[in-house]
Length: 387
Image (spheres, helix red, strand yellow):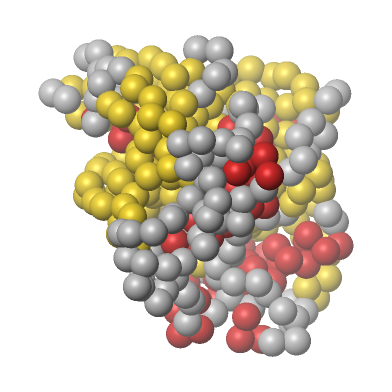
């Protein structure tokens, strides 16, 4: 049974909803589980934004209780994580895959919302590259009508409504700018102890996820693709140490951290970027007694929420003002452009409202299939590439 549905979830019947030009279908979670009998399919639009992949699930998802995407996120986490495993783990996924499950939204001004799924049971409140992929998929499939040269609309993330401005030409999305939820800083220049490294100086900031931010040269680390294994290993060790020694919690929603890490480094020669980064994401549970688990993976994109968190720390230090474009480069040379457009507060904490701009491409339209005789209905992981 793929979903261990709660009593509330089992009362949710399957629904078929037509919004704009496309039909969005959810599969009932009624007993004996939403998968039931027979061959089942999930319809996906696979994309990448600046090199980082994301699946956009437009049909075949479990029907979750809750009126907000934050509530649906919690329901998926608590009762239906098998669906995330099905989409992201082998043989249907791979370590760097992400997914976004599209649902009708009841938020004001939003026709659609999305629950974000990442590896190692991470369910972000917000993700920039995932949002750029979602906006592109909704527009290029006609689920949201496209108006050229600019289409503006809103979609509901678990963090709340996200306003989208998409530049469009000849039926294609050429740029997506998202107005993110406020970003803010929890700690600047804090010190933690990390096995093998000793004292490490970190910042901790929220940009949609909780980021531990480290200046890579401070630990003699070069942010180049050939160093990928070392970047992943040290990043995960620092992040887990940060979470253990300096836990943080969002003041308005139940979202603890840190759940991700951003290394910052010097800009490569010849680049027009203002800064570069390598964002380290979990794909296994780190166990300090098992060094083989001291590993992770690297975001191929410049990371949208990571860009927001970094801009928040720069603003807090007086190094980045409002309305100043900030070009952020990834480890593979792709770029997002961030900008701080407003100062605000979150539960009395100084914060900034960021935008992030980037582009996504659809890579395939696919049906993800599970046959009842398949011995791996939710997939598996193997330590050669999963740690």
